[in-house]
Length: 137
Image (tube, rainbow, N blue to C red; front, side, top):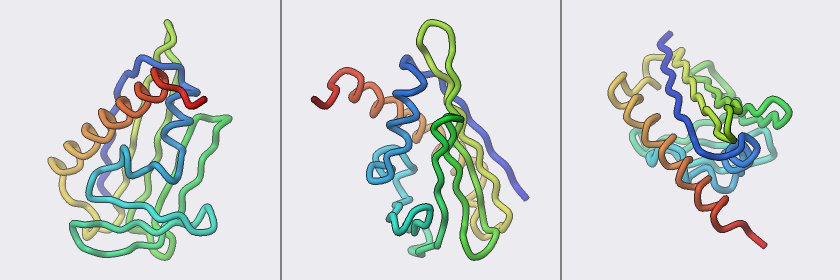
C-alpha cells in the first residue's frame, strides 16, 4: 500500500470550502484533470481515468457535519481517499487530501500524485474564491 497526503491553507470559512468541494456535479472543476466523476445513485459514482482510459465503479460520500469527503473503489480495493476541511483562526481553512493506493496498478507514482494533489488544491482554492467573491443570488 502506498499513501500520499497534501494540505493547503485557504482564505475562506471551512463551510464555504467544504460546500464547494462536495458539489458532485462540479468535482471536475478541482479534481485532477485526468479524472472525471459521473454520479449515479449516490454514493455510487463512476470515475473515468484518462491515463488508462478506464471507468472504475467507486463510491463518494460527504459528511458535512465532519467537513469530510470520502471515496474509494467499489468492486475491488484499488484506492481510497478523503478530503478534510478544518477551520483556522481568522476565517481561514486548512484542506487536507489523503490518498491510499492498495493496488500498484492504480498508483501513478509519487511525482504524478504530488503534482495532481497540489494542482487540485490550487484549483479548489480558485473555485472557492470565485464562489465567495461572486455568490449565486
